[in-house]
Length: 525
Length: 108
Image (cartoon, rainbow over all chains, first blue to last red; front, side, top):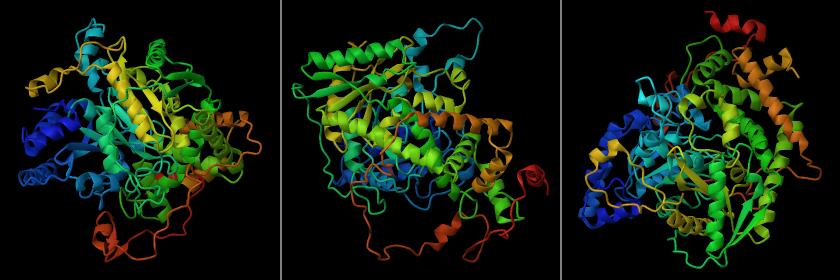
């Protein structure tokens, strides 16, 4: 059993015949079943996964694997189209919708022999920061069931449901993050529009990479905000993220927003000399509400770089606090447009109303969308009204330029990478999280991640340490456009320094007789 | 700052999505209030930014047919169809105004 291994390790094991793709697939499927309470998966494609595993096995037997991803079980967020497999976006609007095609990124994974285990849970149409607002229910953070969290939990006086204390995954790619974090797959695809890959990565203790806008194809990713969406990569370590990036990046004729430059997959070097590296610490990321724990970790991380010889400087991104407001307007406006395709005629839910097209559309959308989605559509339409267009939509586009320029100025001044917290605090208990509405939560939680989407920059969450409550806390690195190699190299160095502890899941132990790798006991905090 | 009933009705017609209740309307009011913070920013002389890739040339494919013949697949997900047509209820029948709408949507 090698479920806790990294993708590269298990790939080597497959090549050497220490484990077969079928065995691996079966173990993952079994683990998915036994961790069903996490609600990370909406659809488990058991039959097709086993078929893919078998085909992979044949290739290994012939000594002709397709590459490093051959036979590797992966999971995909349920807003990516997957041929023959239901794609719901966790919405009633698409329940029962069987995609007729594969999203380009899904096709790429399959072409390289990856085994698609299933579709993961999310907030409805990727709107949200908790993975709590989908029609299939909320996703539970695997760390809720970890020894580390349970040890720090105050025991309840009344006997009960230890489930009461479970914490959220963050979102909206919570299912993917939970799937990777609980060892049911070696990598998962998420999407990132305002932080939707990095936020749950931070809360679930996994690596979450948001690539530069234009690097990875969005063809087949059901769009939220066309000018900001990117497919996100979730893995257990930075090297694995580089592998996935190598398989997915590159121009796609089917997505005209992908750049045409040649992309060369890369391996990450081990950084030894940091003297030429300049790390920027944006002071505005010391946002209101940032927990003192995370502030301390951030500071410690800055010192770590300083002591290793890097130049660490405080920088300013003055328009940071408007990023979330700007996002709110641009996102709702694009959503109003993107959601217009759901009218019940060609696919998805269709209401029974027959009096007129308008009444059928209205009823279909009333029945198919949840409050969050409908709220954003209505707000978006408001901002796009003739009398509001200049005042809100165009204004937001101008503010967007100011935000993007802030980054350009900082990078031009010699800074290579920015170091910031990813989230304001560790994962909240579900019962607490749902006290506030979705928009308020998103506005709070996206504050540190959103600007990177606004500017189209690559950013990555690296799990850093455990909080006092025993839950993961991550830090974020933001890089220059299309400089993923540099970004990941620095992230990898940092990952090695902090030695983030492995989750100790009681359930997982029963299924895993052989742990391939032990994390060192020294930890960052 | 209230949003007039006319605008609310207009939005519902444009969006073909309803506010459903006062909570929905309140949500819009809060959204507008939140967005108003944008006006604190001085954007004199700043051009709107449509895309972060604005400095690059958009890729255009050659106008050649490279795939198709997938009528069956495309029709599979539609609920109502006849031969190779998607079937829609009659058009050009406007929805009633906001005040009458609840009754309309709940009726028949």
